[in-house]
Image (tube, rainbow, N blue to C red; front, side, top):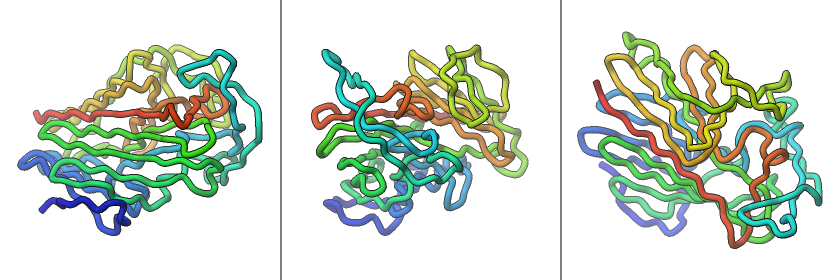
Length: 289
């Protein structure tokens, strides 16, 4: 039975399950970084299981920050729409992917439940230490018979700050013990050249063949299709213009729509102000063969 309640900010100590009857079941773990622990489509689990897997939100940054450091930013003269330039204080985030900091802080925080009904839910968490700015991150899940839409917002509750948001899903390479390996199809405009330190060098190059642990630019929006032959097709779309594809592990592949590239707090910062929050969404749409 799906949860039906409005908890007004109560800690989300139990899993939340959304159901589209006969088609899909989604399980969310608010206490574990508000990650999706399970997505079952027509009796097929599509996400890798385990404490660090499923699908987790990335905020207030995505991917790696060089040496875990970024600077505060101030609005450029005459700038708008999140324009920014460097300046201010250098901040140090904890190193958790030596020598860098990776994937933000909110995946390691308990989230609070705002509202839940049969097929939708909203959660939030406040940005706290080690992040140096006051803010809040919200995440909404909307499940239908053939799609899941995720929306995340990052808002400032004080000073402005650079931020990113996105998702890191771990899709199973095979669905079931006899399933064929997944096929990845997408047509990016460019690939961010990756340096030996796993950070973009700043050069945009022609997209190359996999295997990948790379960021790609899709200026018309992310559009990636995963196909498990004879079983399932799942298309990931987003208005975001960057996607990281990681397929170097045997068990799973990752397709990560995000609002900026790795190290983007330093290279292409998007400023979040008290009157201009960051919002990003993604939709996973599927069909059975």
